Length: 336
Figure (cartoon, rainbow, N blue to C red):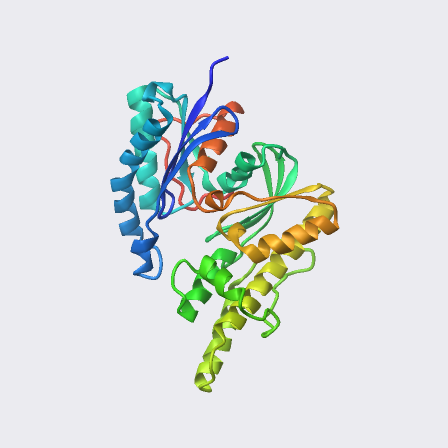
């Protein structure tokens, strides 16, 4: 049986990404062209700049991916591209590139869900991971708790009602003057702080709810800093960061472990940009060990946006019988 090659294309936000997957879980190349240095100047992603930079980067990345794997366009069996969620202009660049390739080479194309991609990133690192399991997806714009019942069968149990975990990290970091992106910077400075220095709220919402709300926590942290500034008191940024981070982690861990108990599943997988947070991984690892639950998380490179997860998602969708056509649209507000 001949090998099956999937090319993944990801341009949902500010990273231009191309990857090539061989068969089921063998990642051959995963290329990322980052725009962080550009957007740091503005304190966040500027959509118009992001889409223009994607235009410059995507074709050279595709060529580089083929060169590094010694493959040709004819060797590619499937093109998987992010169709949403994400920034409209950024998504259009990736999907236009995929459509052009598909039409020119007569290669099947499939639109992949970016958030499902984060879940699928775990398959590339953890070869033994199989459904069913509980997945905690924590990224810049979304926080989800999901029952993964099959490779293409997802049930959303909880989701963000306002600010996602990653979004609150960015906003608190900006207020602290730490810069963009906020998540890694808070993670780093929090290691030097006292997580019990300030008691910030843990918003659990209604009894038994699995939804998330971090807007109130973000506001509480910003108000706390305002009060100290008005009194001319010094801000201990490390203590504030550690206390804020612990409040976020407490909520994520509590709800994740509660759902694990309710489902009876013995596996938990965390993914998304915030999955790179060292305190979150540490706490989830301890909680899972106590309950004899297998804990999975992707490599650092696969936590953030990447095309490897899009290739994996598209491959699974395609093998399950799903198809897309040349009229496929982008869906900026696509749900998981």
